[in-house]
Image (spheres, rainbow, N blue to C red):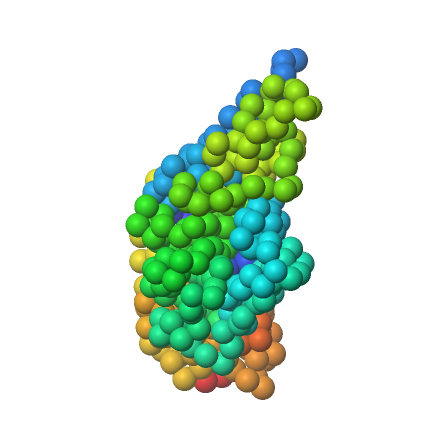
Length: 369
């Protein structure tokens, strides 16, 4: 019974695409790894605090089957993407071409446009089926310098054919960056097999790690291309050298780290990431898809997210058109937590949700379809 591991509200909580529920061990982990070295000791706490970052990156390495040295902590995905693209000289040149989808989270487009004002951004239209590898193939050619791929799309519940698209990018000789904000922890990824050039992600959703603990992953083959402009003493090969006239990039992904780091968010996230790495993403995925399958079978007439498991994410989208406000009010009255975006009501069951939760959901929405 995994429910006993989490702090759960009295409501049926189906908002895991937004914020995952905290583990019951969160407070103790935060106190032990962040507060105690500072609060309970007269010694320098940084030795303990930097150990938190090692725990964070080692957890990510276990979760994604990679090396911890390929991960660098970041504040959020927008900042990570900005640092990343500005570090690659090829992308800073005039006439660089980037491919992304109109379905991508807007913040990603904002970051690319502001970081690379001279580049050309080509969009896959939102009317096209972003789950179809052939749609991506039709938009890819040797003019591209970078392809941006969201593994899962927050407003549509779709899953990109990320394996195929990364391979297309490799064949075309362009760089690839994968956004796992909506998929990390619920859609399995093996970075040793996928091998994109870069990946960005966060801990706030399915990993139940709270905000502020994002990360950037860099393929070792792409690292030598990266010359970050936004640097600080922790970007240095030896942060404690203290020679203002001598800067060398850190030999790992930590060259993207920057100045004095934040620690508190990573103390929380490291705890939950290790939990899910040990639990296994496959287990989360299977449970999530089982519960989603119950809803899609009984509410097929209002389903707008994909019905095919290989094309859908961990989020289900139901569209009630003019009755949406009524449905949301009825769900709120029944103490069932969901939200809505342009495509409809978003429903995301996690490992702590049960078939009984889904039965309650279906009981409320049945009169509306």
